[in-house]
Every structure is written in structure tokens, then in C-alpha cells.
Image (cartoon, rainbow, N blue to C red; front, side, top):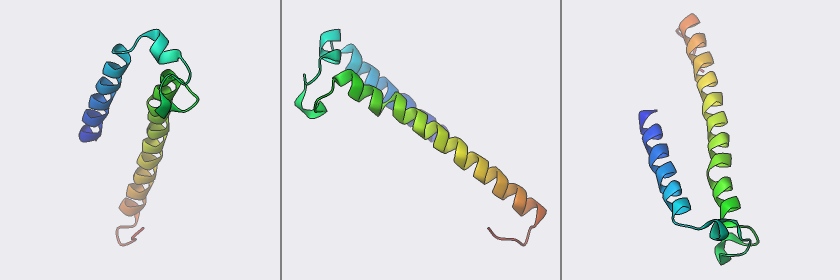
Length: 82
């Protein structure tokens, strides 16, 4: 888990650097950059960061719950493999 936190911190710092290196106009003008398609850089960054972080957070919590349940089952039934 510590590795994941480190990678997340590095990724977040990298995105913050990209944001700081652009003006508000560059961030919010639609179609400013060809590779963002019809959207703005800001919309693209939101999709690639906070929305993605929210998805990953929910997935991590789901996995943690499943692991907790599996550990509880294995403690009650040591010979039972899930």
C-alpha cells in the first residue's frame, strides 16, 4: 500500500506541474490542443485525475472489504480454501 501511495503522490505532483505551467486560457479553451479532442485541457485533466482517483479509491475499498471477508472466513474455517 505504501508503494501505491508513493506512486499516487508522484503522479499528483506531475499533474500539478502541468497545471501550473498553463494559463487559465490554455486550461479552459476547448479544442486548444488537438489531442484533447473537442474538450479543454482542464476537462481532460479532471477526467485523468480526480475522476480516476475516485474510481480507484472505490475499487481499493471494495478489494479491502473482500480481503477482510476472505480472511475472516479462513480464520473460522482454517481448512477452507476460497
